[in-house]
Image (cartoon, rainbow, N blue to C red; front, side, top):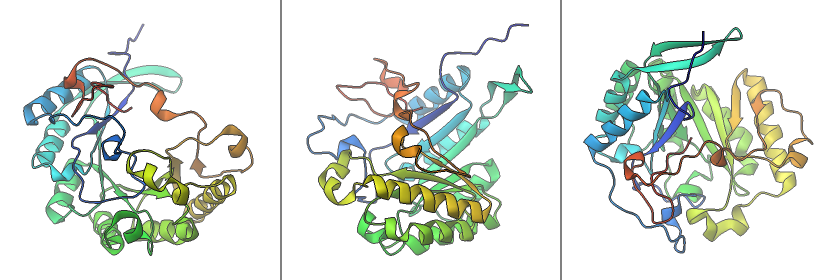
Length: 294
């Protein structure tokens, strides 16, 4: 029997709902925060348009949906969109025991947030809908230096609350030359607070981060230190993690990783979809219209 995928799309779509954000992260790579990017911020999609996008993605077999921004929860309809996405079904095709199988499932849903808009009401909805929560934690003592706000303790509190409510959570930590010295303490605090896994990114210049590249960028030795620390923390905690930004092969070959997965290929360049239809994005640009990040 021949099983055909619904489309050529990857299984995961990252949906950038809004430009708005309540943090001012100095490492932020969002292009609309770069003075000379040429990025034209056009009107965001409204609720009905986003629902149409979700319908189309699920129809095409996209089985994982990650909601982000900016800060997604700054949109008044964010929770409504999460509810709607959770009600949809998708024919998921995957390999099981060496054979392709297709079954109808609800999409896996992720909410990426800096944590500030997250309250008990939001957590109750995430728990009810089985939505996974990813919270940004770029340091402890350096949190305010990186974001403009002193919210590290708040993020750790949310991890504890989410864990108590049975919500799967991920600590999302961007590593810079300014917070590398406390990376072990940062990751350990998040895992002890209840974070189930790690998504780590090394600083890559872009967006607002272009203004501070000289003091944020990691040297090769610092990248190796970052990888070793994260892998050791995860191994000791019995957890697993991923590095979201690629590492040159010649650097990655210098370290042996046990529980941290790292790649050498640019994930942003794989499976990206370019289209002239704004319906495929929350906003469009004069250079890149209709993009969804996979």
